[in-house]
Image 1: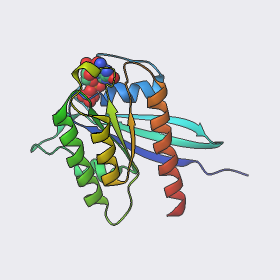
Image 2: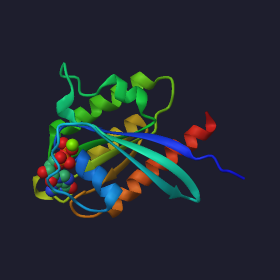
Image 3: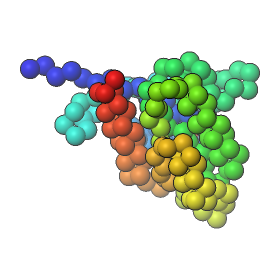
Image 4: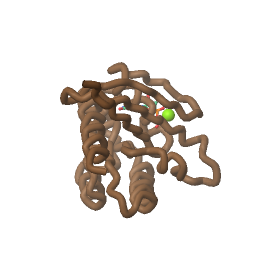
Length: 178
Ligand code: GDP
Ligand code: MG
């Protein structure tokens, strides 16, 4: 019996410099690449086996610099995506505000559908320079009913991998119900 392979389209969003590319590469390769600054959107494709189910995953690592008209998120990216990673950096309060705007935007554009989203607070290794508390992040995730993780792309792949896997599971199971 041929099993149908699920295809999952994931978009990584957030302010410039919060670590979207570092997180994406960390998840895909388990390696940390500290200088990965490219001003283009990158689409990665990989096949993943989770819970004995094979999925073909496409991850769009969005470059903030590419957007015109000061739009923080492009509508076409949101239309394309099925699951979203919204990233801010714990040492950058402005990026947290931007994450809140993105979450609003996402839910408005996808309404009335529920959107699988994980909110990622990155750079938790930079604790001395912290501007956003864990509680602030939790409160924002509660407000939007999304999952929340504090991670560090620099420190470890474990939290990053768990977070992406959680999103893939949620996106996949939602697909099955539609
Ligand atoms: P993007 O613009 O959101 O794609 O951000 P990048 O992935 O290009 O990362 C921006 C900068 O933050 C780079 O210099 C990275 O080395 C750094 N960075 C990314 N993740 C972390 C992290 O977890 N901890 C620290 N200390 N720096 C990070
Ligand atoms: Mg980038």
